[in-house]
Image (cartoon, rainbow, N blue to C red; front, side):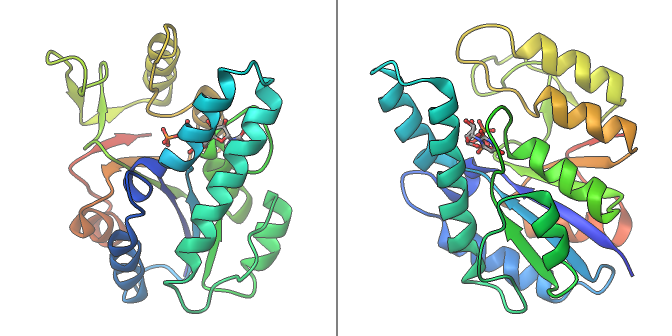
Length: 225
Ligand code: UTP
């Protein structure tokens, strides 16, 4: 039996409203999976984080504090997520050591951010590296990695697969420029590369995608390996 980490993008669970139905669906889907027995689930900040960060930024609040605010938003979303699971931690761990420790006791360990300077992308890859998970599912609001933001650029091309180096190059290219929305941050991809963690970027709203990865190692999104 083995472990898997799932990164739930804030954009799919925290929009205008909290998407509690999706949290419930994910919990039901994972409950019947028998190809893995340990699940690390890392939850993003979504609208909750973005609202606080962008409002406070207008008052010249320093970035370290803005990151702390974002981290707290991810932890609120993570705590909300725990309410749909059995055999799960009831306190949200604040670092990877504590999360790894909890994974000895629970089938699911749900967490948010850890410290300033990165996003939950990096947290999820570090968690995967730590517990020896060979696969990371990055559940987002788009159906894979594109050459540019498909919500803004109609000529954006979707990739079925990328090498780590191609993904790193794309992440650097897309992170230059204001308002950029990178599919995964650079640190997360660098860590995935060093530990050969295979990343599946999928539209996290579709339960068949999670199942297909966990049973067949396939998805309709983008595989980074
Ligand atoms: P997210 O991981 O949700 O950021 O954390 P994101 O990728 O920018 O958001 P989505 O997925 O596209 O919606 C929200 C914010 O919290 C802070 C960062 O400021 C981040 O932008 N954060 C999060 C940290 O500083 N450290 C962490 O470990 C996690």
